[in-house]
Amino acid sequence: MAQIFPAATAVRADTDVLFSALYAELHRLAKRQLARQWTPARLGVTTLLHEAYLNLAKNADVSFSDRAHFMAYAARVMRGLIIDHARARSSAKSGGRFHITVLTMDRLQNPIDTAELTRISDALEELAAIEPELATIVDLRFFCGFSFSEIAAMRTISERTVQRKWEKARIYLHRSLNGDLRT
Image (cartoon, one colour):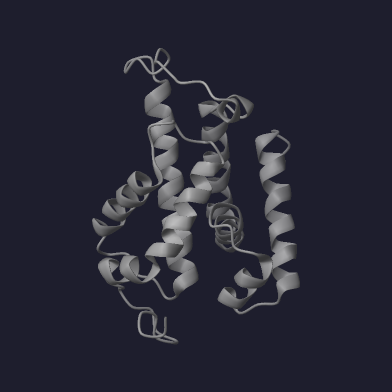
């Protein structure tokens, strides 16, 4: 990865090169997000990955200083696409509330809750505005599926520091989602 992310300089990384170099990892990320069953059955792994690519490719002014920043950005893009698909499917205007579905047991266990998805997305956006590093750790841990040790290596901080920041972010998100934040 040293060729794509030179040390100590933030470069405008070529999206094609990044996607080619990290395609397997991005595919795994998309698959992991879809496995959380936050998405409509019509959205597949490859579709999500390619839509994320198109979204990233049109943002030519975005630069990434390292792999962690790129993966966190890709995770946020995929999360946004998943939420957009869930909203589109549930909107009454597009007939989303009335669609034919093949029922399987794994889909029934965790049905899509668009309102909950929106609340989570809003809470993460609030966290990103207040403490961007905590939001990045949530993206890398929860959405990308990286372990604490992988995040620590990417961020060049200790694993224990990552765990403390993860807990702080979880507490913030829990309070935000339950309306317990004090102003």
